[in-house]
Length: 127
Image 1 (cartoon, rainbow, N blue to C red):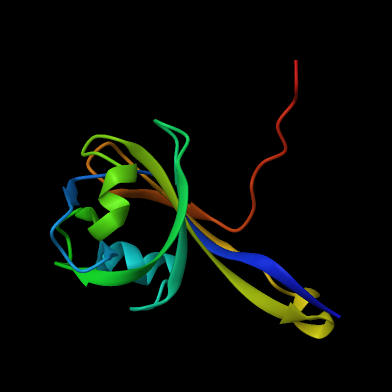
Image 2: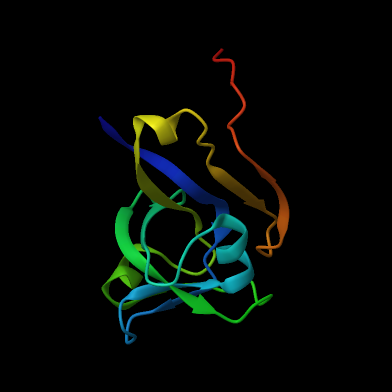
Protein backbone atom coordinates (compact mmCIF):
# COMPACT_ATOMS: atom_id res chain seq x y z
CA UNK A 1 0.00 0.00 0.00
CA UNK A 2 1.10 3.55 -0.75
CA UNK A 3 -0.32 6.74 0.79
CA UNK A 4 -0.06 10.32 -0.41
CA UNK A 5 1.06 12.32 2.64
CA UNK A 6 1.74 15.96 3.40
CA UNK A 7 5.50 16.29 2.88
CA UNK A 8 5.79 19.92 3.93
CA UNK A 9 4.02 23.25 4.07
CA UNK A 10 4.67 26.96 4.34
CA UNK A 11 1.81 28.12 6.58
CA UNK A 12 0.17 31.53 6.13
CA UNK A 13 2.82 33.08 3.90
CA UNK A 14 1.91 36.43 2.38
CA UNK A 15 1.79 36.84 -1.40
CA UNK A 16 4.22 39.63 -2.33
CA UNK A 17 3.75 39.63 -6.13
CA UNK A 18 1.18 38.51 -8.68
CA UNK A 19 2.69 38.48 -12.18
CA UNK A 20 0.23 37.61 -14.97
CA UNK A 21 2.75 38.10 -17.81
CA UNK A 22 5.27 35.61 -16.48
CA UNK A 23 5.85 31.93 -17.15
CA UNK A 24 3.50 30.04 -14.85
CA UNK A 25 4.83 29.02 -11.46
CA UNK A 26 5.25 30.22 -7.91
CA UNK A 27 8.52 31.95 -7.02
CA UNK A 28 9.44 31.28 -3.39
CA UNK A 29 12.28 32.74 -1.31
CA UNK A 30 14.92 29.97 -1.47
CA UNK A 31 15.42 30.12 2.31
CA UNK A 32 11.75 29.25 2.75
CA UNK A 33 12.02 26.48 0.14
CA UNK A 34 15.04 24.98 1.92
CA UNK A 35 13.42 25.17 5.36
CA UNK A 36 10.34 23.31 4.11
CA UNK A 37 12.18 20.94 1.80
CA UNK A 38 10.46 22.17 -1.37
CA UNK A 39 12.54 21.46 -4.47
CA UNK A 40 12.84 23.69 -7.51
CA UNK A 41 10.22 22.61 -10.09
CA UNK A 42 8.41 20.44 -7.53
CA UNK A 43 4.62 20.35 -7.83
CA UNK A 44 2.97 22.37 -5.09
CA UNK A 45 -0.58 23.01 -4.02
CA UNK A 46 -1.62 26.52 -3.03
CA UNK A 47 -4.55 27.18 -0.72
CA UNK A 48 -5.56 30.84 -0.64
CA UNK A 49 -6.85 31.63 2.85
CA UNK A 50 -7.99 35.10 1.77
CA UNK A 51 -10.30 34.12 -1.10
CA UNK A 52 -10.69 30.33 -0.90
CA UNK A 53 -8.96 29.55 -4.23
CA UNK A 54 -7.04 26.26 -4.44
CA UNK A 55 -4.68 25.42 -7.30
CA UNK A 56 -1.59 23.47 -8.37
CA UNK A 57 1.59 24.83 -9.86
CA UNK A 58 5.34 24.31 -9.42
CA UNK A 59 7.98 26.03 -7.33
CA UNK A 60 10.80 28.16 -8.69
CA UNK A 61 13.51 29.97 -6.76
CA UNK A 62 13.34 33.59 -5.62
CA UNK A 63 16.16 35.55 -4.02
CA UNK A 64 17.20 34.11 -0.64
CA UNK A 65 16.09 36.21 2.32
CA UNK A 66 13.78 38.33 0.15
CA UNK A 67 10.51 36.97 1.55
CA UNK A 68 9.19 36.80 -2.03
CA UNK A 69 6.11 34.70 -2.73
CA UNK A 70 5.14 35.47 -6.34
CA UNK A 71 2.15 33.85 -8.00
CA UNK A 72 2.85 33.86 -11.74
CA UNK A 73 1.13 33.21 -15.06
CA UNK A 74 -2.52 32.18 -15.20
CA UNK A 75 -2.49 31.48 -11.45
CA UNK A 76 -2.03 35.23 -10.90
CA UNK A 77 -5.81 35.45 -11.33
CA UNK A 78 -6.16 33.39 -8.14
CA UNK A 79 -4.00 35.42 -5.72
CA UNK A 80 -3.15 39.06 -5.10
CA UNK A 81 -0.36 40.72 -3.15
CA UNK A 82 -1.31 40.69 0.52
CA UNK A 83 -3.29 37.43 0.33
CA UNK A 84 -2.44 34.80 2.94
CA UNK A 85 -1.77 31.37 1.46
CA UNK A 86 -0.60 27.91 2.43
CA UNK A 87 1.91 26.24 0.11
CA UNK A 88 1.94 22.45 0.44
CA UNK A 89 3.85 19.61 -1.18
CA UNK A 90 2.97 15.93 -0.93
CA UNK A 91 4.92 12.68 -1.18
CA UNK A 92 3.82 9.11 -1.85
CA UNK A 93 5.15 6.80 0.86
CA UNK A 94 5.11 3.04 1.30
CA UNK A 95 4.11 1.27 4.52
CA UNK A 96 7.69 1.13 5.81
CA UNK A 97 8.27 4.85 5.22
CA UNK A 98 4.97 5.72 6.92
CA UNK A 99 6.19 4.28 10.23
CA UNK A 100 8.73 7.06 10.81
CA UNK A 101 7.59 9.87 8.50
CA UNK A 102 6.99 13.37 9.86
CA UNK A 103 6.11 16.39 7.69
CA UNK A 104 8.04 19.65 7.84
CA UNK A 105 5.77 22.54 8.82
CA UNK A 106 7.17 26.08 8.48
CA UNK A 107 5.49 29.08 10.10
CA UNK A 108 6.24 32.71 9.26
CA UNK A 109 5.52 36.26 10.38
CA UNK A 110 3.83 38.98 8.30
CA UNK A 111 7.06 39.60 6.32
CA UNK A 112 7.53 35.89 5.51
CA UNK A 113 10.38 35.48 8.00
CA UNK A 114 10.46 32.05 9.62
CA UNK A 115 9.24 32.13 13.22
CA UNK A 116 9.33 28.38 13.92
CA UNK A 117 9.00 24.91 12.46
CA UNK A 118 7.24 21.78 13.61
CA UNK A 119 6.59 18.18 12.57
CA UNK A 120 2.98 17.95 13.72
CA UNK A 121 -0.14 20.06 13.96
CA UNK A 122 -1.35 20.48 17.56
CA UNK A 123 -4.69 18.89 18.37
CA UNK A 124 -7.31 21.63 18.44
CA UNK A 125 -10.37 21.58 20.63
CA UNK A 126 -13.64 22.31 18.86
CA UNK A 127 -16.07 24.48 20.78
